[in-house]
Length: 51
Image (cartoon, rainbow, N blue to C red):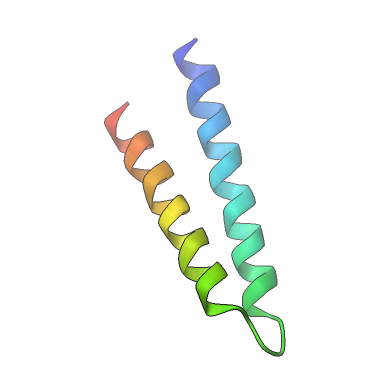
């Protein structure tokens, strides 16, 4: 069960990284959205570190 949880978190982390790259490549990126994504990514990273 723990490995499926880790896999799910890693998948979410990769998805957020993709969203960040897409948003930052836009001509006028939404800084509020970028900050929100970065916070979500950090929370996932912290959760992975605790496992």
